Image (cartoon, rainbow, N blue to C red; front, side):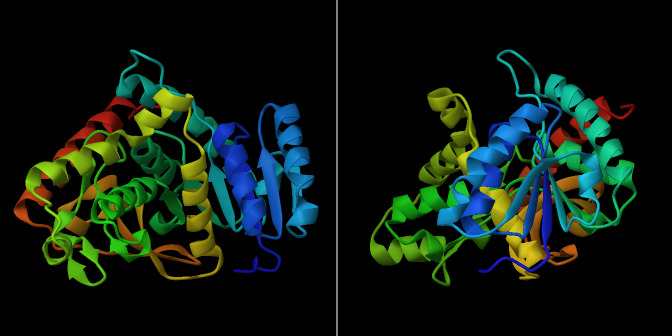
Length: 317
């Protein structure tokens, strides 16, 4: 799809993830103006130059390094800056460090903010999304965590491999936490309009509870596996974040599984969780409440407990 005329995106953080997002956006010609912001100004400028040298093969974009004043007039502000989790470090340790960093970044954004969607990629995504929503005071749908959008894609990919079917015909969502307690919503997973169990039976492929659990585990551990193999994961999340940005910029009303603050949906309040949402020009336009079965609701409740514990650990930051 052609880039929206006059559209502007700022990416905060020129590390592996931020640079990869910028690169994917240049290939897809996502926006008219793309600003890369980082405390390491040389790194940001280096990434800009590297990407710019490929533009003659792609098309024209105004890509440049900048500072927080450049978030003014942005359609979307994407925060990728974060501190990676170290070996032996707990989830709470990571939450404390990255929430402190996110608070500094948020304060810097809001000094110049005059509109646009804020998309959070930094982890722990659920906690950061909740806190940024709190700090900014902006409408809930304006703050989006990339959350389980990528996890849902991983789930669909693994299921397509199991059933030997085009992944574009696989529709399913990973809900709850972007992390340890996430889970696929099997009761709402469909292949070409058929419930997944019905499709598997039709093509003669066994898909029992044990095999479903294995797919769920592989989905949850995909990021860790990639980090073990290549020390970082950034290509998948770059495509995921770009896809979310396009849904917003082009007002596509696309259903994506993202992190947003709930206000009574699924019986939850004052918490940010990952659920299917309709994304458009104003961000999260509608939260879709899937009818969950008893087992799935129990898993959703466990995710809630985990996220609330992490939020409680950073309540004074």
